[in-house]
Amino acid sequence: MEQPTTLRLEISPDDAARLLHHPAVTGPSPARPTTRRAGSVFFDTPDRQLWSAGVMIEVRSTGQRHVQVVRADGAMIEGARVNLTWENPLPSAEPDPSAIADTRLRRLVTPLPGTRLEPVLSLDLRRTTRRLVPEEGQEILLILHNGQASGGAAGHPVCEVELFQKAGPPARLFELARAIQADVPLRVATEPLERRLLRQAAGEMPAWRKAVPLDLPGEASVEDALALILGHCLDHLTDNEAATRLGDHPEGVHQMRVALRRLRSALRVFRPILPAEPYRWIDEETRWLTQSLGDARDLDVFEDEIVGPVAAAFPDEPAFATLLAALAARRRLARAAARQAIESERFTRLLLDLRAWMAGRAWRNQPVSETASQLFQPITGLATPLLSARFKKVRKSGRRFAELTPAERHKLRIAVKKLRYATDFFSSLYGRKRVRAFTSALQELQDGLGYINDVTVARTLIERLEKEAGDAAPAVRQAGAILLGWHTRAAAEAAGTLEDEIKRLLAGKPFWLTAPGEETPC
Image (tube, rainbow, N blue to C red; front, side, top):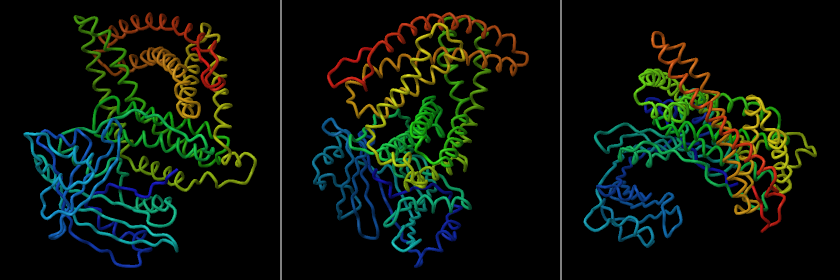
């Protein structure tokens, strides 16, 4: 896995001096820091054509020197998403798309006829650079950007720290950040500074995203797969952090929870070959964060999928207005609790500790044994027996689905979810075409079992809302009775459909036991 060499941290401008004078910074620094003034202006059309295309054009000015920088981060070019960067000197501070030699980028940043490029964001920063040499053969650049950003209605202070690993192990970046964080409040920047400021200038909230497919190289070792899968899950988590912290869209919390569950599921996959103590603290900390987001997610599902359809079917029932008012108050509290968790030092510490553990491949720090040696075996030798073990747990409960208690159905749902995540992790090793039907069947099972579980959770939420409603308790109770009557019947019908779906899944030959081109009925 290509290890990260840059770590960006958000910090209050009031703490900038404390950071620069922190012993972890001054101690390994062989020379005084250097500071220079740097200005940047970002351009776009009045209707934000460049922003919509995923491209940025910036003119950096230092004295009389001007440089044009163009970046395409995930922009669509000729049907594919690409990351491209172009730099060229300019005679003035005005952008010049015609000077871009890369024709693909030039087309992206050239305004459509009738429009023009205009300044949308200006940065006036002091860039302080300090060279750190923690040990011989190691070198880290600490760069503090501190100043003002202007764009939109008004200007506001900007302060960000960039740690750049020039030589030595990448884990040193995270160790340095942890040492600073012990005394100076900071956050891991989950969105590049320029993109965050341009988004704010465009008046947009942070976007959420689903997990993207993971491609494991067929020649990957178990260790390579572990690093790639954990990094994939952690990127999914942090890419949804800003949407959850700053926005109110239910998908932000949902995707963070999904990322955490995928991360925890991945750790269980590799648990037999991981040292016990790191596994324990990662499991403990990710469980804390999952639980911190749980109430907000449960209430979102309750409102959107349990209350919403029934309230729409009974527009003249006043009890639903009372229930929704009580639910809105509870959701605000749950949202605040979720934000508090991801704004906490504990969350930042989790990200830094986990990244440091991954960057240093610290799972190697264990006694030499036959189990530990599996880290260097091909992942193809682990994937098939692991998928078979996951499938066996689903089969054990699924073949007697009609007899399961609610608690047993809940366990089956968890088993299906773990099998689904393992399938996602390893599907590229088998060819996604072979996996598609199996994954689709698992998704349907997961959705159906999830709905039955949501109805069970709804009973608990209604009881809680009724206890908190005071004089409005009778109305909440009445709305709750209508809800449970509606969804209990629907859940019973869903259970009947699920029984048939599980039988079809278990009757088919799973994809990891079939030859390429062989059918995998589900």
